Image (cartoon, rainbow, N blue to C red):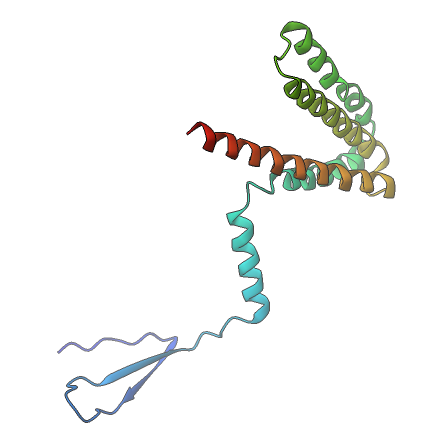
Length: 170
């Protein structure tokens, strides 16, 4: 019969043999690790939920990163906003070029592309203004919140439409 060493972090309690057919004694091992608090359990639950649904929250994560990056760029070199302002108009040119080159067949595709171009221009303008004035200004922070909410809702709607169309085609 080999004797096992017990872990240093646990207490071992031997319960005496009971009457009846049992031949081996019952051993109860009690861990000395503290149990999780309610706050840590809630944090773990939120973390697991966020990890499980991480793709659904991609626009909010990107917007948060943009908020931080524009704040850092504002502190380092706010004059970068001039270049970013010119760059903000690029989606309009891309949209116009794509409409001239090959017009989509459905009105819904034209509408989605126009809305996407307008949204991208708004985001580019917000980035340029946030770099120039600081993203924490009340008007810019409100615009960031509205744009983030719009992007999140559009993302969820587009994902749902894509999932429905994939199920229909299968």
